[in-house]
Length: 371
Image (cartoon, rainbow, N blue to C red; front, top):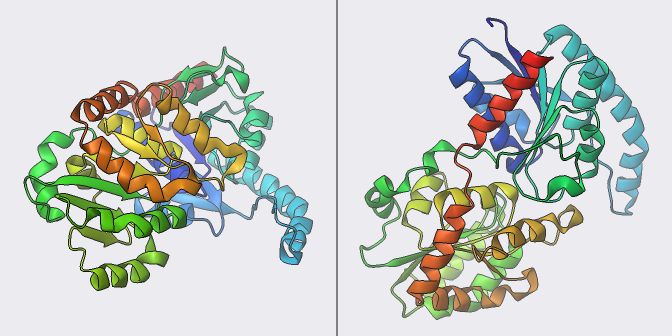
């Protein structure tokens, strides 16, 4: 089909955006002349990230409900119904003009109006739910969606079991074969051959509680043959860097952001991470043992549920957000227990879904041809 057209809608965080990009790239791999249009929310990070990957995006003026009780939040909530109505109208205009064969929702503010209008126009829709706990919008949209691609088992609580396909979350291709990148990774991060490596990830913005926990306990590493690669986030970088210089801890390398995640994963013996859906998918695909610290600042405590999907399979260790000062001592004891480390790694790898992008795109093609 020469004029196969897909709209992908959603965003807000990397956890929504990067799976969307992976899906788009897989569609183009399989149908080179496909046309893909993204619909995002104005002012959100997808408006910058999507064009960086060569795709066109149109923004809707859509916002979420503000949960705080401040005056500015209350004023924003007064505008909410008007902006939502405007977003529905604009989404309809875009869809009528573009005429997609199928519309895919990946979660985030723009996803609601776009998929709802597609359903009203009779365009087949598919939801890609990244988390182990579905949000209200996806539950609402699922009633008229043809398929729901999920990353976790037991999602029948939220969706019609006949519509669910367990695909996993699409992740970046470059972490699929890490064994060939170890030497490059050691050079890139200046790691000695016999050093163990702990990788600390707090999400793209950094995680204050994880950073504070590491700061409180980092003297534990002063006499260890361990390299700590620590993604602290842009806002915390200067403070952490000056502390490391003051303490002369040369085996700790702080960075605001890690551009070569593939190389970081390739040399990591253990990863300390938040439990966002994308992080979990990357850790299992890479087969990395991890200590997961779920963020308490997310809706429905879904990061704890994400983490438990690994912990229940002995594929990760859980540390609560208010116990982060224990992270390094726990990490060191796991590194010293080779048997435990290997078991967590093996169980993690077994949960990975390397074909997620292909499986989701197969469902996209299926529902468009059956429409």
